Image (cartoon, rainbow, N blue to C red; front, side, top):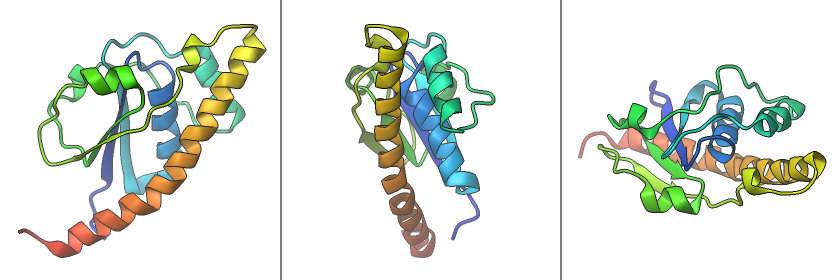
Length: 153
């Protein structure tokens, strides 16, 4: 396997919930084989329920912050993954050779009701993201392995 980690950027509109969850979960489940970041088209602040749901699932939240896609326009990613439909439509073009994927999820930050009802939406979306990431990791590792053996074209 290549010594270089697989680089992944998750993009959402506000970088307050879905992309932050994706970043934290892949960082934890993927370990050193992945270099992970997240960003927003119009970044805001990390939703407190995002932190709460991640911490209750024992996912490390150290260093999580809302970031702009502008910080990452230099590219160099193996995967750019949009996690909301609005970001998919507005995502800038990142230079370099990478795979662009879209994983659409409901926006938990738009949930209404009591705090516990809204928290339940965050939990559901986090579970969906974690399930998708568990499928993504072996596929990305296999693709990375094949690419490292293929050599230059």
